[in-house]
Every structure is written in structure tokens, then in C-alpha cells.
Length: 329
Image (cartoon, rainbow, N blue to C red; front, top):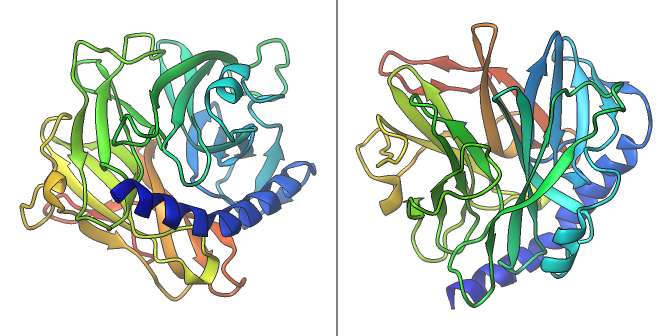
């Protein structure tokens, strides 16, 4: 029943999601700069003086900026969707969701979601590259294939929405998940190309039956690991109800607890961003430290632009108790 309910909800959302994605991808084909880009599921990396923002789109969309205000559309990560993904994920044709990007052992690693609406027959793939510079055409992204997958009727989790973090000991971990059984945590192999199956998959966040949770993001600050997640529903424009919640743990394996001490695996989570004067709903966040400054990214559905999905990028602060502050000052 749970899977059927999730499938129905996702199918209802499909129309809005595809419309927003089509708008963004149409613009990505034009070489120009914007100050208020339409994005979904933004993540970011910095190389030299340039920031690169990746987000949901055909073959993984990309923008670049040197000031975090003016964004230039770049070529997508792939020139064509990975063959393995098309063959193993029915319905996937190259529209690639919710990437994540990390720098590890001299390479940039991008992780991406291959799926189709209403099903948890999904897969998370991995590609790597030595540079993010779009002018370097001699070293394109090298796809290495699937990291983890889920199969409808077999797995009670959904292999999309990856977030990868290297812990204090240098061990790589991935959180992922959307709807179904909640947010999962796995350990990765040293090269980040596969799951380290010597460590069992575990649930680190879930909600009550019928309540939506997805889009995890792992971030380390001070003595804590923070787990950001998105509650409720995206992709419905002005009718969206997305919001960001967070918990923290001194160990990357958890348990992650909210301000009240409730375990996120038992339904806990402190909401830190939802609706405000500019956005009907906000979610699918990421967080970074660049040059000593912490940043928070998400997408939000603009009130002024009829629910268009816009980039939210704010400096992230911390209260006296070590909880993130991301609301607009």
C-alpha cells in the first residue's frame, strides 16, 4: 500500500516537474548569463575562482559563476545519457535528477539519479573528471556506472537523491532516498564508484506512513554531522509544500536527532526553512564551506513568478547551540 500511495503521488507531480525541467533545459541551450536562474535540486563545487552549479536536467544541467550572482549556462555533464542507465531503468531517457558533487583524491565526482515517476526502479550513477573547466574538452566526464540501485517490488527504498560526504577519518558515505522507506545510509568504496557492502545499509531518517521525505544532504560543522532533508511535496509550482528539516549527530552513522532530541529515524526533524515572502515552498537543499564562509542552497517556488522554481543561495549562520540559520535576514 505504501508503495502504491507513493506512486500515485509522484505520478500527480510528474506534469509540474517535467514542465519546470523543460523550461530550465530550454534555457541551458542558450549561451547567456542570468541573475535569477530557474533550477531544481542545486549542488555546487568551486574550482579556482569559479563556482559550478549542477542541477536536475537533461544529461545534468550546469551553470557557472565567479560572484554567486551572475550565472552562465554551460554544456551539460553528458553529451548523451549513459547506456547502462537507459537499459536498466525503464522510462529513463536522459532527464537526470538530483545530482551531487564532491572533490576526492584529485578528482571531481558527480553522482546522479536515474528513475521514472511513480516507481522505485531507480539507480544512482557515478562519473568523474579531473577538472570542471568547460573549456577543457580533452578530459570529459568519465562515467563509471551504477553505485546503488532499487527495484520495484523488491526494495522498500528508492535509489535517488544522493549526498556524499567524506568523514573525519577519510571514509566516504552516501545518504539517499525518496518516499518509500525513507533516507538510507551506505558506505562507499575508496574510489567512490561502488557501495562497500561490508557495511550494511541503514535507515537514518523516515516519517510516519503517508508523509513525504526525500533529498538528504550531509554536512559537517564543528563536532557534528548534520542531516538536512526535505519534507512534503515539490514540483507543483505555487501549490508546492516543500520545507527543509535538519538533525545532527556526533557520528556520521547517526542517530541524527532534532532540537527536541527526537531521532530522525523515528520521525524527528527540526524545520528550518519553508515558505516566506518570496517563496511558496523551498527544499532539496545543499550546503558548503567556501573560503571560510558557509553557504546554503535550495530551490524555491517564486510567488512573484507564478511558482517558477528559482535558486535560493544564502550565507548560512549558526546559533549559539550550533543549529543552522538559513532564513533570509
